[in-house]
Image (cartoon, rainbow, N blue to C red; front, side):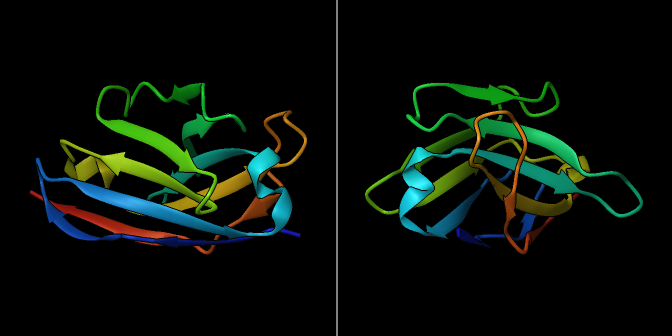
Length: 119
């Protein structure tokens, strides 16, 4: 069983930066790929980033490529999402999720953290 807790959300002006953290419990966490998603009001949940279990490979949605970076610290059991050059359209609840099978099926989810970007 893996529990995920996101933190680091808040209100920031357009052009600013935030770093989200996703702290995981459970010894198998280091073997799981991790993903970041977001959901804006009235919209479907959107994939934004993924990092493999090793941390060597990362993948991003076109909407955030070049602005967001995900990384992981296995010693701290934490995954990060560094968000730069934020835009009002980045406003959403952000979730981290764990993929225990490596098939891009996410079976553990955090509770989400709100990010609001003001113009």
